[in-house]
Image (cartoon, rainbow, N blue to C red; front, side, top):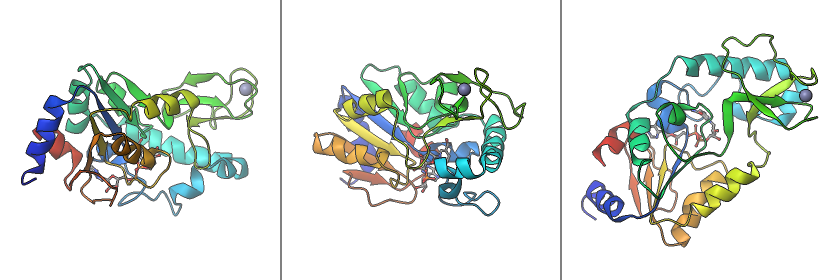
Amino acid sequence: MNDPLAEVRRRLAAARTMTVVTGAGVSAASGVPTFRGRGGLWRSFRPEQLATPEAFDRDPALVWEWYAWRRSVIAGCSPNAAHDVLARWSRRPGFTLVTQNVDGLHERAGTRNVIRYHGSIWRLRCAAAAEDAEWEDLSVPLDPFPPRCPMCGALARPAVVWFGEPIPADAARAADAATACDVFLSIGTSSIVYPAAGLAATARARGAFTVEINPDTTGAAVDVAIAMPAEDVLPRL
Ligand SMILES: NC(=O)c1ccc[n+]([C@@H]2O[C@H](COP(=O)([O-])OP(=O)(O)OC[C@H]3O[C@@H](n4cnc5c(N)ncnc54)[C@H](O)[C@@H]3O)[C@@H](O)[C@H]2O)c1
Ligand SMILES: [Zn+2]
């Protein structure tokens, strides 16, 4: 494979089904900080110290301050060229996008068939879990702060998947089904957070041609690794 981009282009043209998994790297060019790498720290905390049910139980106001900061950053960001190309591809039949991102930028770019593997930062649910309804809340800043469940008055929490929590069953099932595809692309993810990180290996074991796009190659077992930013590579495919 002398020209990996040409090989991927050829595979995509011939593919009847394709699945893309995205991580924080696709939103980096939009100005959304990734967890790992520059800008990943908020105050002196690592995401693993804040994005957990234990952190929320201990200090919900601190966790909500971090989410409020992220919501205000994301509210000022727009989809970039990588989101736009994926939105265009999503008009092809047989396309599935599984995103670990909670920022909503794929949806804002107009992408169809998005599986939100880790939920959305723009949705809330009751932390007391007395009812399992979720609701959308786009307000920046949040009022009241921290936000409350409109049904029972308990604290609300972000409707995102925290470390140690299971993937929503529907999303897990749909993503697993989508690993049966002709071409599988893993874009902008450190491939550390499971089970998302296992999807590429499953797809490959099921016969998919697998591609990673990440300027810092992760060592994930794929057929082609392209060490370039997503917003540069995708428009060339
Ligand atoms: N935008 C968001 O919604 C957002 C942001 C941060 C973290 N998260 C959450 O963090 C968890 C962490 O996993 P992750 O793998 O998504 O993020 P991560 O922060 O662990 O890794 C980001 C990866 O993107 C790569 N990257 C950086 N710039 C890139 C670019 N321009 N093009 C392509 N790749 C680039 C980095 O090398 C790194 O490997 C996820 O569960 C996700 O829910 C979401
Ligand atoms: Zn409630």
